[in-house]
Structure formats: structure tokens, C-alpha cells
Image (tube, rainbow, N blue to C red; front, side, top):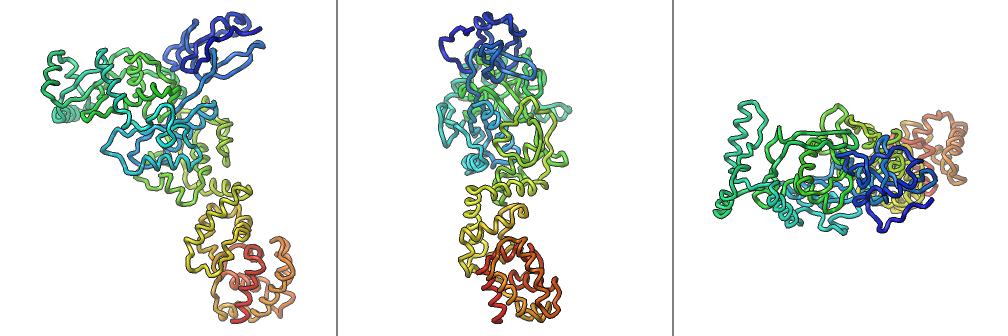
Length: 566
């Protein structure tokens, strides 16, 4: 059986229920529910847009497109592009909470073959941090979740900074004024402050009293003619429709009973978040809004705006908060929650992505060591719970160790690590690098291979504990003689050993154990201590066998010859 042809390809935003197609195979299908994509209304009957994520399936041997939400299925004519956005304010740099929101949007988009958009909400000009806008996009690229459209990349819906779209918001606000959904407010800051103080004095929540709602058209014209400072406010109305959040289920907040009419255009001509995000989401054809749960209550307000414009709202999914291990909120005052802090400290982006998803929900299972591709494959929107995610950053070194081990084990990624480590070595030791051979790719690669699984980040290898790899130690002969009077004998034995062969640490370790028989009574432990001191100048560290293999025959020979000539 062939489905009736659809004359024009439809996007998810435009898709409608293919009633003829359903009717032709209807008897073999289960009861079909369908409704608005935003989930505000669920009805039966043709002509309703499908809710959820459309995908192609075969039902009763016939290819159709379905959209699954929880246990219900909705059928649409053609699956279209999922478009999601991450819309931070450049009033600060990207932190862990923002990265997590961006990541869930990215994963959701890639899971369904959609687009991930970065939009900067920079309308609060007084709080902008210089350079923050550029650094936010830098950090998304560093994390491996680059946007498909952004201020830097551009796209079909440029510009992607709200400060460059002011004309669009003014036009939208005037549309609301014209249809009676918004009005001019001339209340002074002093009056608003008095209202706030009075409410607090009476132990009430401060709210605007909607005074300017009741101005006549003549009064408004008179005040505008006098060029009185003013803002535009949106008229909140009772009777908010319930909406189905993809995480929190059905929600409805009668904002008009607890809030005053919100400002949508400020006195400086810039829009507020409430207007700008609704206008942008509509014009950028955003299909799904995944954002923090702190915006859940405001969603009813935004849906009133969509209704006032006559626009269809996107589907909403509010993500539970990311909290500290003790349940306290992540704060920007905590300098160590910014992504740049972790990047500079040597943490890998995949380790950060792993830990911020491991502590939360939305995946078939939680396990340490997942790659981004695995996160996308295992993502399941229906598994996101309403419980806050508790982040334990003390576990981050272990996450990083696992991902660093994986990088070292991969030939291509290992070469990138070698280059990074070369930079770190030169930066850390500078003029102490008397022997440039330690910067050779083969030498550094050998050190990485031997230490993989032991180090938690690349910076560990330029710490004092590993300085012997890059700088030849200067150990007084007296210090060595205090351990054993047979320093020269031990040095010659090791030289003979490395000249013959240095293969694996296991083989070398076995050969080192035989040295005791060739001395005049120095015990094995003292022999190892002499060799360790001579090669590294340190009392502890990796095994002596590993040190010898790491340094290589040539470097070991150079260091032991210095002992013999001292």
C-alpha cells in the first residue's frame, strides 16, 4: 500500500497530520493522538500539528513518520529539522551550569539530526563583561560542542546577538500595543521604588500595580507628546493554558494573579528577556527550548505572549538544576566553576562533559568514561528526572585520568598531546632545558605511554615529581655514598645493563634484581635507591625500571657517567 503523496515537503514547524494517509491504513493502526507541537492542547482529529520528535517508522508495512513523547505516539506528514538554542548572557564567562545546558541542547539536536544555535542575549548593556561573548563561543568549541549557527559562524537567521536585532523587537512590541496586549507605562523609578518598599513593609511580594493599564488613549498621546520617559509593559491576562513540559509534565501558572504586568521594552529602547526570547525563538524557528528549571514559572507568561502574537509556541523542556555536592547552588563567585579554569588546569573537555552528565539523568545508564558520541547514542529525553544533579568535583581527576588514558592510547590524539606537552615543558623549565633531546617526539611519547593510567592530567608531567624527565639532576656524590659505598660499581653495572638492551619495564625489573649478586654486600633496596637518586635526584617516584625505560639508554648513560666522573 502506498501512502498518498504529499505535494510539498513540510518542516516540523509546518507539519500536519496526514489524515488521508491515516485513513487509508487506519484500521491497522492503534488510536492516534495528536495535538499542538508545544503540548498546550492535546486533541483528536485531523489537521493538528504533531507533538514531539518526528522520525520515520514502518507501521503495518507502511512507512510513516512518527513522533514519540513518553508513552504516546503522534503521527505527522514529514519529519523536519529540530532546532534548539543555547542563549547565555555575556555578563560573565561560561561556567559548568551553562556548559551543561548547552550540552543537553547539543546532544538533543544531534540525536535527532537537528541544529544547535548559539544566541547571545546581550540586552542588559550595563552588565556586559568585555570579551565574554567571544570567550563563550571559544569555550563551546573547546568543549567539542560547537554551534551550527552563531555570532561567529552566522546563519540564515543572523544576527545572533540581540543587541543587533533591536528593530525586530520594537516592531514586535508595537504589534502588541496595536492589538491591546501591551501598553505604555510612564511610572517613574521613584514611584516603583515606593511600591516595592510598601509591599516589603506589609510582608508582601513586590509587584507593579498595573496603574498605567487604565490610561486613556488621549492621556497616552499627551504624555508621549510631552516626551515623558516610558517603558512598554505586557498585559498579563488570566486563563493561562496548561502546557506539557517534556521533563515536568503538565504545568500551568496563573502569573496574572501573583505578578504585575512585566516590562517588555525598557526606557533605553532595549527589550527585556521575556520579549526578546519569544521573538527570537519564533523568528529563528526554534522547535524545542531546553533551559534551566528556573524559567519554568515564566513559561506561562511566555505562552501568553505567543498567544498575543498569534504564534505557535515551541516545545519546552526545563532541566533540573546542577548543584554542588552539598546541595548548594553553583555560584559565579566560585572562581573554579568557570570552564576556562578547568581548561587551564589541564582538564580535558570530554572529562567535563562526562562528569556533568554522569551526576544527572537523561541517559539509559550512568557510567564513567563516556565519549560525546556515546552520550548522544545513550541520550533519552524521557529519562530526565526532576531531581537536581549533585556535582562532586572531587571526582573530576578520576574522570580526567580515564579520558587521558584513552587519548594516550589513540595514536592521532597522542600526537596532539605530545605537542601540548612540548609547550608545557618549555614554559615550565625554560633555561633549565640544557638537553633539547627531551623535547623529541619519540622521547615524550615514551614518557606518556609509560605514565598513562597514573597521571590525571598532562600538567602532572611538568610537576616537580617528574622534573627528572626533562632536567638532569645534580646529586652530590656524598649523598650517594651515604646510601652505599659501591656507587661506582652500581653505576657501571647499570651502564652495562642498558648498553646490552632496554626493552620492557618487566624484563628490566627482573634484570635489576640480579644486580645484588654482583656487589660486595649492598642490599637490593639500597641499590635501587642509589640508581633512583643518580637518575632523578628524588627519593620516590615511578619504579627504577620505568625511570630507565622512560629516559632511554642514551640519557641514562649520560647521567651515570656524570656520577662516575664526580
